[in-house]
Length: 302
Image 1 (cartoon, rainbow, N blue to C red):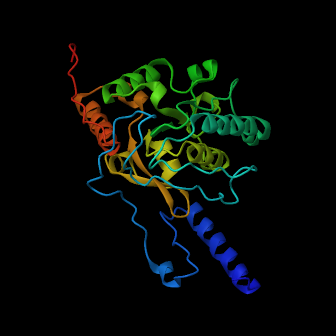
Image 2 (spheres, helix red, strand yellow; image 1 turned 60 degrees about the vertical axis):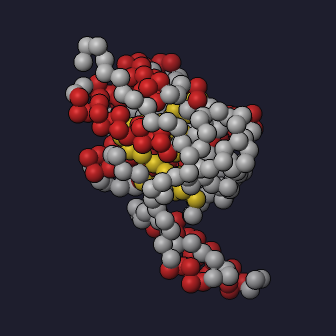
Image 3 (tube, rainbow, N blue to C red; image 1 turned 120 degrees about the vertical axis):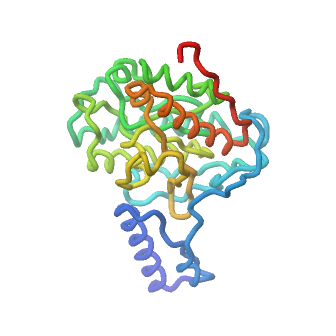
């Protein structure tokens, strides 16, 4: 329809939807020219209870099924940093182009470095810690911000927390090279402080585009600040962990998200209960990917 009035109404609806998202609304109504009644229909926020199994993590093997895998990433809202919108290659029936995805991530990193959104607030960084791993990973792990060791090396999740995360991945049947690891913030806050709402709002659009390029089948947030940043909620970790949520890349395009404890928290609270809770969350992620549920091995030293 070429009616200017209709096009103006469409723009207003889209702006209202983005405003609602920034205010913490979990979803926005889907807009359809052919079926206006769909404006009143709620999208399914949780993935199916019994997903169709998919083959083990092997990029060369076509994936026969997936959960909430986007077929296209629509142009992002106004909050998105300037640049050409990125389209995610469909996962079903073929393998995404790893080289193309890596090039897109490299271009996004260069744009981030040029635009330097962290200059809008106080940081204590010497390096930008953008992220690392498989550019077409099936699962993305997201923390809150780099720490001292990450800032020194320019890599996410190193030091004791990184070592524990690596062990978690191995127990899941994965390796760091098979997943993608990053943080909401790309620079270290002063004294490793928790990022503020303003800092997250400035940096989260870059993370959104980063995840959109990778087009994962699942996201794991590590720690309360990361979960709250992506889910736009003030819920406690006790209420969030162990329950699948969704991260909205664009209206109608969502990725299943599992909140769990940060490795640093596990190290500070190294109890059987805490480790068991994290292990349960990670096993749910493994099952979501269609991989065999791993058996937890008890350490010799307890």
